[in-house]
Image (cartoon, rainbow over all chains, first blue to last red):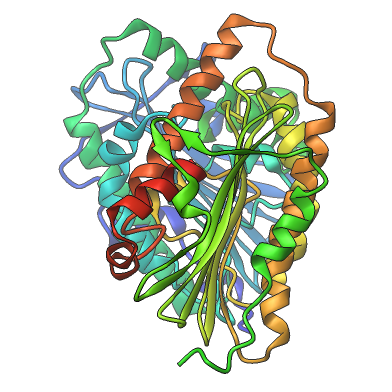
Length: 255
Length: 242
């Protein structure tokens, strides 16, 4: 089992933005206010035990984006809690792109997914529309050591203790614990591959016209956001470090 | 091939659990005479399927067959009466000489992300079994995208490599244990009072059954098995199970 030193850990935001150039050709503009909150305290923060950033953006010229947030929280020089979230506005039923990438010396705990904003079992068309492009990626990347271990494929098991969190996942989530340095890099490749598909789907997305469907979709979307903002197991630690106000801002940007 | 295999007692074990219920056989369903499927034998397949009715249950479908004496297929489904918001029980078993593939689940008939009480009652109560069987060799996601999208957060699926005989029974355990949990739900189930709820359940039940019917040939059973079953027999099986 590899134990990585701090300097060998993944520079999450840098890898996504600079190495993979995920947002090349897209002009990101800072999202200064979100749900009535000034986002600037999240752009760079420092406390005695933790420092980092959660940077929220919109896409210039697009009315389809609620937020794109990329962030890293560095904890005591021992752990990095990183996130990439891309959420469409309430007029679109796109799944929520969510990536949580928590790295410590022995391993990365990662979840990457398109979280469905409607009950995917009921809406067969939704499955075809939003998941056909990642089905192949899911099959490819679920074989990364850690996701698959000793002949057992354990994706969708990392969130074991939190049934509410498993409920938010699609049948194409990549989640698990990955140890080796090269495998951690492969995970980043998977994250970016999923993110590229999401951005492509965003470009093609059409607003919802059916008011009943929209109501159903919003109920689910808001329930998911509430779950993560209220129940995320990392939340209590964040509250202790940053206080209630900043905690609410940070988790709202990340989910 | 297959002659020396001590096949698992899938049907016997599932029937053992079912026999706790007062079952009455369904002989006709949606215009299909189901009686020819009770026992069948063709050049390639041999087996039997039956459908039953019970209190609070619209239909129980259970059966098994052998394909070329090389693959043992088993199925058990429970579709609750439409007056109840009970989940659907689905168990699918494909046993070969060297590998067993299976899926067992308690499929929710409402959106269990939104409905927390439903999730706690029917899914989180099964979570200890889901955790227990995570250590089974060959555990993996259900391969069919469409069927996986119907599954609950506690489904168990696997491709268990049979490198010692005890594994056949180990692979069967999730089916009987999930079934026991499901049968316990029946005792406490109460009929739906609310029309909105009734519509939600009706819609989701309909989609689940439709997807399973459409995916029977080619995904639930492979093309060669499907061809060997011939269309009449296959239609009867689908009518019995879904």
